[in-house]
Every structure is written in C-alpha cells, then in structure tokens.
Image 1: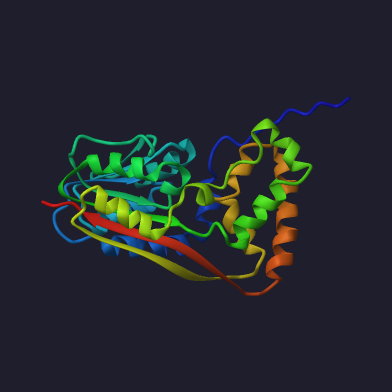
Image 2: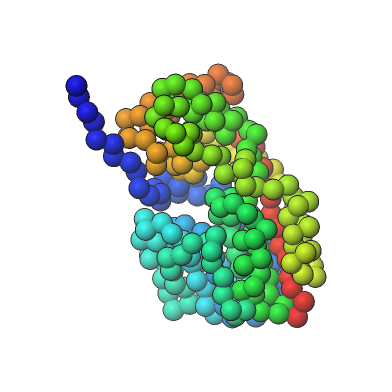
Length: 270
C-alpha cells in the first residue's frame, strides 16, 4: 500500500495575496480617511501583511513611529522591504497584543476577522491607547456570498470531510467571528470612545473573469483549507470549488464582484 507524506503549507503566500493589491488597498485608504488629523507619535498596524500599506499609512499620517505587527514569517520577510527610520515590523499575535497606554493609533485592516472574541480583543487594543487615541478597523462581512458559502459546502462533502479528520472542516472566521455593524458601534460606546463612525460598505470590484474570484480567495479565505491538507488534495479541493462556484455565479468576462466590508473608527476622550 502506498503511503504519502502530507506536506502542509505552513504560511501565507505574500505574492498570491498581492495579486489584487489595488482592490485590497481601496478599503485601506477609506479607513485612513476616517482618522482625524493631528500629531500621531506612535501607531501600530495589527496584521500588517507584506507591509506596503503600513509604510503608506506612516507616510500619509506623518507618524513618528509606525510599527507593523504580524505572525506570518513570510509576510514579515516581505515587510522588511519597507523598513525605514520611522517604520519597523515585529512578530506578534494580534489577538493578544496590547500596550501600556502609549499608542496614539491602533490600525487593523482586514485582520481582526481571523480571531474570535472581538469585544475582548478590542478592549485590549483600547487599553493600549493614550487619552485622545484613535482606533481604526476594517473587516470583511461577506460570509454569505458565494465565494465563501460554496467553499463551506465543498468542504462538508467527501472526500474532503474525511481529510479534515475529527476536527472537521476549518471554520469560516468571517462567518464565525465577524459581528453586525451595530454590535461594533455598541462595543466602541462601551469601551469609552466619545466619537465613532461605523459603516457597512460594498466595494464594486470588477475582475477580468469569474475564475479570478478563485485567485482572489486563494490569497485569503482558502488558506485555511490549504494549511490542513496535502498539496494535491488542496488542488483537487480548489478545482471542485471552482467548478461549483462557476455553476452558481456563471462564467463572465469581466465579472462583477461585490465585496462587503465593515469600516469602524473611534476616538477616546483627551
């Protein structure tokens, strides 16, 4: 009997993530636009990824010390390209991160959705802020879109269901962890932010074809499956996912890909 060795992908792929850099950057720019101008001495970008947007935020907001934090060695390796006198990067767990009330801005763009207990995490982040500090967070809110729901359906069928073992298919963090916009508004109020802005926004992306939706989610949502199975099994999963997704969405060139996101901002009393 032939026994194969499972080679599980251990980390993120920065190049795959960057394939739609322009589309992913627009919500980041919108998030920065919510931040009130003024002196920002120290800021952190939690879940900084490959680092170019961290550096951009540091420059655009004239931040004296901009610290990008991520727990992906591959992402931090790419982020090292953007190190400067004012910008540096550190390994860290955004779910547990906090500081001693010495930060002017906590920024988290498309990262909070990967961890549970958002009220508790946001409380730790708030504890890191100085009086008058600001928080700016963006999370996807598209768990009910076909790009996500089809992946869940395929994962719950054989042969993939058996591959995932007793743990079962990996959870969809957007479905499991992301809250309703009004809940985030309540959390910001309870944490003492005197001013806040929370909105649900749909980004009207136009991709070259429907098949490009698969390439988009390979850099983010599908990584949770890629880390649980061997490479051949993952490629088979992606093929079945693509076939079913095309049945649901149809094949279009170009393809309109609406993407829901929640943007939130708050400022503590000075």
